Image (cartoon, rainbow, N blue to C red; front, side):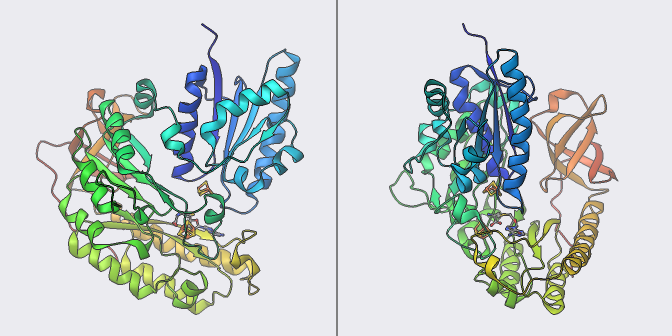
Length: 461
Ligand code: SAH
Ligand code: SF4
Ligand code: F3S
């Protein structure tokens, strides 16, 4: 048997980027590759890039500069060191990457990484760098499934991509260009993946997609299934204790999805529903195709179905043309909804998007100041939400040993980390925990003898 070859993969992006990294490892496992945490002793390094932020490509080129030095060191030692660039920057830049950094062996976009083993072999055979256009095909149907050891090593919570790409074309966003048109995986594939994960110890499945609730994959009956229907089916799989989905677009929320929150005990009451802005003028300029009131009504419908649901969101401050009045409307929306947490970003123009052509840029100092005001409001809501857990008994899915000896960490329904002193055989179990205190963002508590009580969420106005 050949020596195992070491693969180091570095992901820069979203949940799907992280999931893709795992699938690249799965794709290369049959070639004898095993993962390593260091680039220095690797035989192959994959940069799994993200294009969402400003200067994303520049950061990739600077990483590649460092890898080039490692490649030179390896060559001096007579060792082969290969470099692959994957992810959304690979899609956007293509062959330009090889032109600018000839040390790169292979460039592969998010739709073609199942070809990585062949591409690497071909690059080696032909002694040249490769970037090839592939036809759009069912990569998930062609990828080898994860090995049981890999599933166990990744822990009790796993992502499954169910939908990819986006047809929404928010005016600021590169994703429709890097990930392409929206497509949904067939139901049968998702069931098979989930059954395999559950059979090897996974207890929590997060269904991911750039616009996950636009899911419309073909069901076993030959008809398109909604995300709500898919969730019902997955909840039947033995071993699956918790289901989540991310990221949703407000326009694609339907009654079935909302009802699933009432009907499925396994569906966690924590919904990431980005709104981006509270101003109708800005929402229109962003091409979000909903108003702030549409969003408020949607939140009300979720809460009517299940008062336990808490929300998180994404916000952009300083979108071109955003006035103080627009920004105050965002603050008002946040005040009113009451979030358990949210991400907020300063607007940055992405080349090729319609917003990048807009003229009325908000001054950087104004953006900084708005970001700070928004973040402090969100932080105070998050702190209130976490403090409200003290004294309650909540279900926790235990994930792994924590840093302190004897301490095990898991997550609540709302993804709050929760620590208890216990033996590690609780890992993989959902157990009630009475929370007694809060340390930064972590809940501390002890295993409870009584079951957790559902509790309506009350934050915000
Ligand atoms: N598909 C997901 C994720 C999109 S990217 C969704 O629709 O929510 C994640 C977040 O990055 C977005 O929600 C948005 O808030 C932010 N973002 C995207 N493009 C941006 C840009 N050009 N400038 C600032 N933030 C941006
Ligand atoms: Fe980007 Fe909008 Fe699609 Fe989300 S919904 S991926 S923000 S275009
Ligand atoms: Fe980034 Fe691509 Fe995800 S641009 S956010 S890795 S879809």
